[in-house]
Image (cartoon, rainbow, N blue to C red; front, top):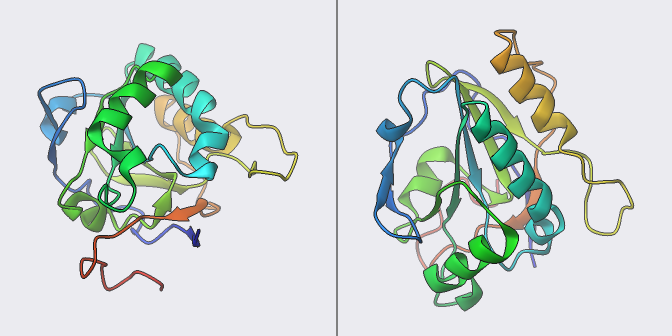
Length: 193
């Protein structure tokens, strides 16, 4: 398991466009979230121990902030040939088991992950009403085995600032987790950077 950190997309960047299949059926596009006060894009998967460590808080935060109008979406971009637990069928089961109420999308081509410069799972991107990146980084300081409680503190602070119309602190710590599992020959130029 390679561990990688995030923070490659520059603050102020416009949310890259996407249209991806949702594991429950249909497709979801960036344009579906027009008018939301904020957009939270999360690159997650099923097998990664870092995601498994925080998945119940991810589900709780997704439900809580969606109820407050925030657009929330999870995306899995892993190579399912090498990691079959991350297949759309596995994603559908994970969504049901964990209680994700947000769309869980499958990025088979891995082009959306590249557009966001996603590096690891989990990787969190928060955009304001104008779809400008205001936060990218860790959910909180908890990691598997470090005995720090999973609270979502850092991501929650950014969400609360956006909803209150306040600036998000530029002091942001990278997310840490398993690297995205790129298909053979498909790793982006920033992989390993």
